[in-house]
Image 1 (cartoon, rainbow, N blue to C red):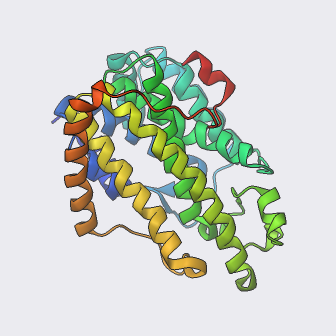
Image 2: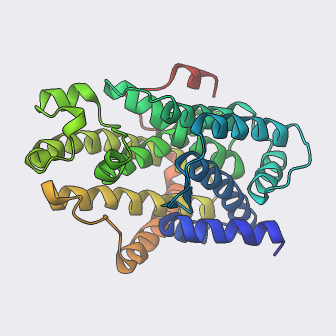
Length: 313
């Protein structure tokens, strides 16, 4: 394994146990590409949040706006083929070149980080979905490129899965995000529930906040349901990895729902046994959708929100 490959593998293993496990199910070339893409995404996210491998770094407080602009510039330079020094950008450069990933998607991801830096207000569900598209939906699309899908409805399904993942993340991390001064839950939903956004952490609001999160996870389910219809466009190994990640991440949301208003007393983590079950179910799903499933009609989800620019996907 190359030095950059080893760096990327370590990044995903430290940053996300769930995605790391799912990546192991991919064919070697796809796995390498997925790990390199993740390493770059993780690095950018950590830089914006002053974190390391997804965890806070005490005393690290770089100016967010200058960090954002540096990331945007380095991303453009990497895509232009300039020599890069940081291993995350070397990995990124290799993967976008190998799979001909359009410039649009990496830059849209940086636009998502800009929403955090600029203090974007999440007044409606559409605001939350727009953010989720930028920070996760476009990652789903880039992953589809790595798996050999570069056009058609399958790209929309890949974006849908990214949105579902991010809505699940938001639901799981409500209180952690609030401690960082970020509230991604729609403000109008919070207002309906009688919760001022700035008081989201107050114990007396936990029941009402949970009801808002329940609504958000119901939205996530629509995108999880839509995403499965993109699997027949993948090879069976890729479908296996994606189906497994879909099951495991969806189960995170199930854990939040099961815990109710105490959902944030401890982080929702999917255990090893459940992950193994997800991998087994994912294998069965992939074998079905990549055989008989290809003969079935594609599911339609006309009521799903889609960013207007996705029409060009």
